[in-house]
Length: 318
Image 1 (cartoon, rainbow, N blue to C red):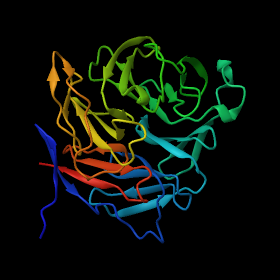
Image 2: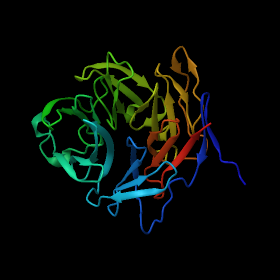
Image 3: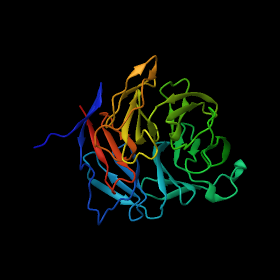
Image 4: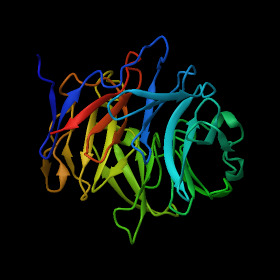
């Protein structure tokens, strides 16, 4: 029996469990596997833009527990949030130009349309949202990663509060504002960690949208940040160049915003507090990782975009 590949570095090394989430493609096909979240009971929800089943629900062993959804052709972002003990999902759909809030079983609770209130959007087609993050007070933050590159903040009712960003190279601007997360690791000072993918960076802002700092990740075209425990995890869909097809890996950062492990890529090397060189694809494990989901044992579940309609895989921590 062939031993599974080992990937990663330092304290975060993993066995690659290929075939973990494989299903009958005739009954439960996938197209692009965009994002994954875990509910309080440990079920893993996968979002795909395959309208025969936009949501596939797995247990931790990779067995199917349910499926739903056939009305999200541009399904891209998936977030989970608990409201008074009841968990809900937020789906961003780039083709519908909407954010849709649903129950865990798919019933629609709220729809947010394009943000005409900003004064920046003349047409709904300008709005191509890629991600949401939900604050403890229920405020909804939406990143328009494939549209006009703004972050739009709403209250829990979907009422507009403010927006910031836009396309550009200034500190407070973005180039592919692909993902967002609420960082509560410093409980007294929560912040927003926001992807600027084509800048190979995460940018940190206050909850009101004031720029704080940038975490540079040279060589990494990074997707959304996923915070678990003390660490930040993220899929890197391509490395080196945005046209470098099939060159993705995973990156893991510690509480000091330093890369500590790169499963599927070269190991991180620091000099004077900065990454010494661009990180690069190394082992042929991944094609285009698009998101990660982390369980309580620090295992990583990885889904991929534009990767031959492949199902998710599991990285088991060792």
